[in-house]
Image 1: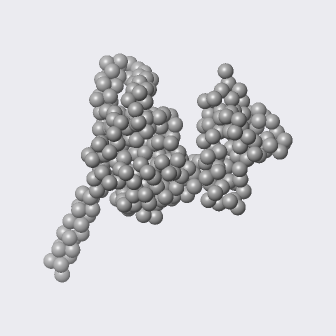
Image 2: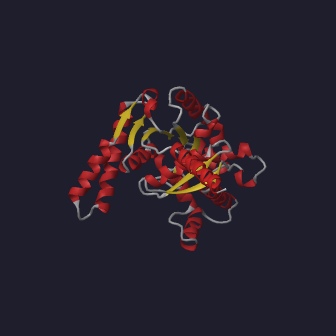
Image 3: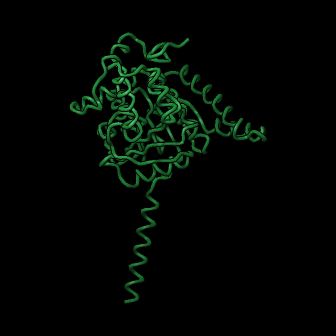
Length: 313
């Protein structure tokens, strides 16, 4: 009996060791998209010792991304190494050494452990990208999307690696915001999920997990809140200024809902709510707003265009 027990323990230990060995430790990361989100993700990954390739369509975009990363790193080091300028300079140098850029996604994914997509919030374009990269990435490579509103399952279905596909939703500005939502679809393997959680921790973030539900956690609560503020204003119940003041002073929020809408971009907010409305047309939380639609049609998209709910100089 003792012999049998020892054999069972050995077998169980060997199985556990094999399972642990199979869990992917991410070392090489490819980030697709050199905008604010993609550049921020590339920065925190490189700063935490990962080898990173940042990919976008042109060298001009990538030069702008790299300049932005350098400026961001300088701001970080001023706080992190306030009394040690030499250590700060060394940190910047090491981080930038870990980062390269490319305009050819196919050419760089052959040696990567993790692909993080942070391109335009368009399901068709994302699906085309993942379908193409799926043909060239190694079998072990995990794919992840930084989407804030699209269904991860639909993106995963454009590939043959549904079990090695999940969501990694970072928040803007990435170097400052500590949260990452890790999204697990019904097809995402436990090993993939754990690898994504481990990677999130490795880049200095606090991961939370969520199923593949519209908006995940933060946006599922935040977007309906902003839309209800718009409806309150549309009905004439309160002015947008008073609504913003009320939420800042009464709820302790750093920005009011209309300030936040202008910051996020009215086109982005409309795209999200329209997508959710198409999925659940009878859900009153996802009902479109005539006023929001009108402002977007007039190209008044918020701070980025100089006018949204408010005017900006």
